[in-house]
Length: 342
Image 1 (tube, one colour):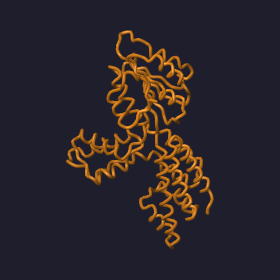
Image 2 (cartoon, one colour):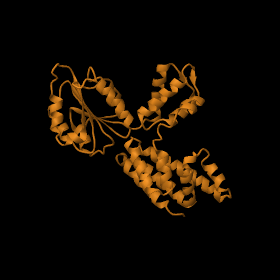
Image 3 (cartoon, rainbow, N blue to C red):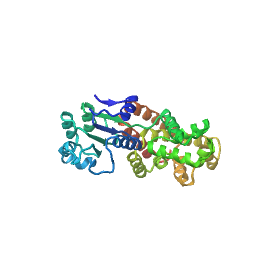
Image 4 (cartoon, rainbow, N blue to C red):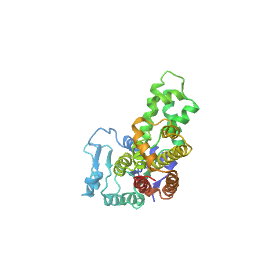
């Protein structure tokens, strides 16, 4: 099975194996997928803008006739040189083309396939993992170590240091999408241009939460019992490459904040003071939905929700291929149960 992990990925990206010209990039981090695809394709051809050297194909269209992939991969350029094929995978299956290329791998042609999250039994993933001429590379959300390294790489180019407290805050604000994180770091470096060190104040002034792709809309609607709105926001976030684990982690924090506010009310505080204690920096646009959740969800129900979310987070770690489904079910349960007071 040819599925690269850890340092194997970095080594392959730095020096792709010509014996494995078919490369599948998949996972929840759409930005990392694009970044790695760009790197692989830039080193595959002399001019990525030359339409004769760089061919772009749509996976769903290719599924109607997978043999087109083989024909394109075996085409010899009229004026010679290297070629590359960039495929955006959709929901339809074109894995038979990959199986054919396993027997007759192309020469001087690199094929890079960009996909979203794929289950282990997904035909495209299975075809690439079992083929001797292909590799499958998973693209998951950056860890704290990955983000710290990304910060160092970007700031090294600008010759700027970053204070330890500023680094810790910046790492907490990044993640979920590699390109979004990289853009935030570059924006910060430009803002601090001329300074010897980036401070916590610089981070607070310029960096937005690059990992919070519609998270507020998902969480607020779920706890307010807005099922349709929650589903729509969740679908958009997953399509944008947001890792489901981030969404559940955000839901856990929100549940804990609501629980704190409910306890404050039980201790005799007014609803306003309780909101301030649980949500000290709540944006006005979220206030109505949070108030609805606070009215509808009693302390005991919030405690059960916190427990259910912890179970969902554990299940997602055990069954990472089902993470999106597990998260969706957990949020749906919250939204349905939050429709009524109690």
